[in-house]
Image 1 (spheres, rainbow, N blue to C red):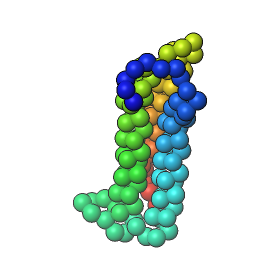
Image 2 (image 1 turned 120 degrees about the horizontal axis):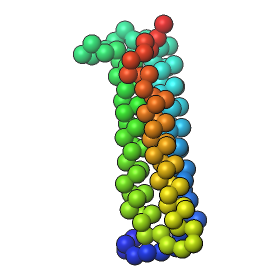
Image 3 (image 1 turned 90 degrees about the vertical axis):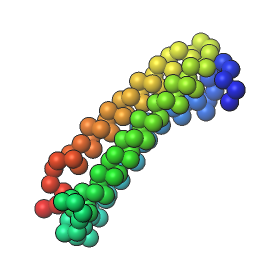
Length: 119
C-alpha cells in the first residue's frame, strides 16, 4: 500500500472479525491441548518445575495473546487511511472489537497461569 487515503473496501471488514478469530483459535487450542496433555500424561514430564502440559498451555496462551495484540498496530495504521462516510465508524468499531478480543483472550486464558491442569 502506498499510504494514501482510500475508501473502505469490503475486504477491510475482515478487521471486524480478526481479533475474535484469534481469540477463538486460541481458546480452542488451549482447550484441546489441555485434554490431549492430560490424556497423554504430559503432567508427569516437565522442565524447570513446570509440567510439559503447563508449558504447552502457556505457549499456546501467550502466543495467541501476542498475536491478538499484534493485530492492533497494523489495524491502526491501515484504518487511519480510510476515508468516506462510514470510515470513522468502521475504524472505531474495528479498533474497539480488536481490543475487546485481546482482553477476552487474556481473561479466558488466564487460568492456565495458576489452576491445576489435570486431576
